[in-house]
Amino acid sequence: MSDPDQAADLTALNVMGAWDFDAAVDRFARWGLRWMDIWGAIYGKSVADLDTDTAGRAASALQRAGLRAYCLSTRVFDDHVERGEEAFRTEHLATLDRVLEAAAVLRPRFVRLIAGKLTGAGAGRTMSRLRNEHPWVADVYRQAARRIVDAGFIPTLENEVHDCFLADPRDFVDFVDWVQPPDPFSVTWDIQNAWEMGVFPTIEGYRTLRPLIGYVHTKGGLAAADDPSRLRWSVGLDSASWPVVEILQAAVDDGVSPVICLNPSHGQWRVGYDYGAPGAFRPDVPFEQWDMSQVTERDLTFLRARIKGIR
Image 1 (spheres, rainbow, N blue to C red):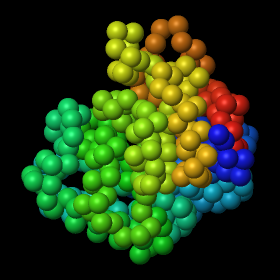
Image 2: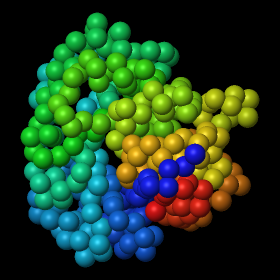
Image 3: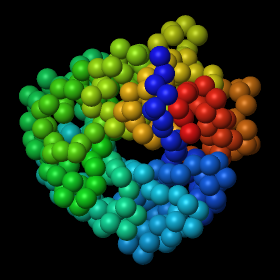
């Protein structure tokens, strides 16, 4: 039963509007969005390389369009833990310190950390390996979260693909319990990333994660014909195989993610699927040239039509 008092805004990664930051801002405003997830291509800079002058230029562009930064999506800790504690402490925490200088200008709600990589992850539960083989991980994540909180922002931990050590909802719960991060702290649940790591999205998985979730990332994806649990094709939300409406309606009704963020779908390019723009999602086109705007606009329309409380 939908809760009529709950509502959620939509946003997307800035590059899903356009790779040119000003064009992305204009498109987000035309789409009726109020927030932007700052991911990259910020006047030619990545989040890791963002200086305060460029951050100020981006903040001014957002303000002129009536938009605000919702999350500064760093790639801090997107690395194999097998590289060791020193790499995480020196390289990644130094990157975080630079990012927080830009965050002081952009003033997002969240600053993102990535759940790192563990070789062989995706073949089952990971937390026992992480605790036993890399016990320093908890303290490094705790320190990073503390730096974000002390800077005035909320740290959010997102699951990625390719050996990510978090995919199973029970591992998320165990990881946060192990790290004991400062308050406030939340999880960004990237639903399709977990699926690509072998954990098909279910309402039961959502309920396990619900106490931790502060932000939801969503994208489509179509299963392989011979295995309904395996992601194969990159498609929009209206064609997705996972229970999009059931899970996202629950997230809105529960008020866990006041803003829901669209991401580009993983999976193979499917011949015959309407991706809109000629350069959208094609395997022969570099990612930095993909035009994701038409699929994104369809996803926005789909969610606004099908999820009660979505704005």
